[in-house]
Image 1 (tube, rainbow, N blue to C red):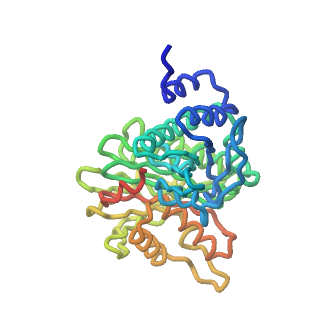
Image 2: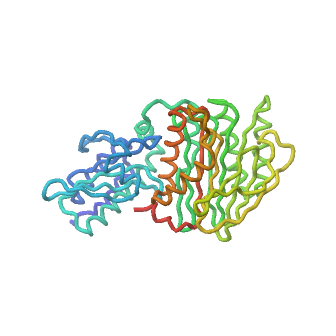
Image 3: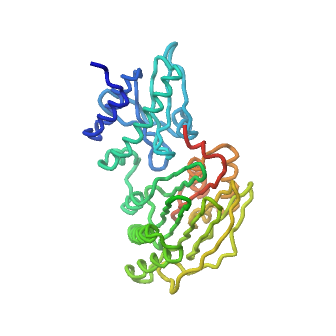
Length: 395
């Protein structure tokens, strides 16, 4: 009887595999691929730490910091990194990616690292990622591992609402972030890529905590329902407005920016519902799109809003954000501001940072600017159109 291929055997394992056994099976199949050790690490909600997934046969490991460790660098830069272990073994750090979204890293100890073996191990890590994403739908184990402290109920709702934090193709990259990760209330974002169209939405529900989270949940549901019915932006905004006005009393509302990009032409259309307009970073310069007529927030509108339009250039970076980003105030009273936001994104791109790494670092900078205590929720979406840097997101 022939020995089954380890990758095929791993795929067969997962059909009846309990999530708490996943790390043990990964370690066992890795040994069949010539690895003496295999450990999976998942990033926490703030992307500050990498937490090891423990299991039978898995070597004990401590958490790793994303900044300051070799495993963290593999995560940050989306690179396979190696380090020698004695005279004959090599330790690999391979980014764990769902598409191009960073989930964590996998540590592998290999006695012999020939090129063919490295390619095989990369394929193995890709399978591990897909299995973890699927298994995560059936368990709380990985969500519990990713949190360093208890999420507020509002934050629990908001994180479940979010799409994957990053999407990438050969023409566009979309990445989002929000803070404070464990206490986020009314801020959220959403996006979808449907053929040549990319839809984006950033929303800030009035208030804080659970009431704001419930309002934003209803707004996101209305947004997705209208978008999936292929309605134009004014009809999408009107549907969201009607849900908020009809279901929430006391003049509750949400500000929002809704945008749609045509990938073939670079035409960007958007609606301003009492919200900051999108801004563009082009060649290092901050561009304000407009003029664009603002409309009342969603929930307070009495007619369909007007649509604004702009023509993007290849390489443009479009930023949609809530006011908690630019209005983060230092102890001296200085706002973070749009200029500092645009400069940070331009410098990060020049330094070779990908969109998700740019936003990870940006949120740390915004928090630091406000002495690590945001006075308001902050969320942001960064869209890169035909920058030529899309390969940065993959191993």
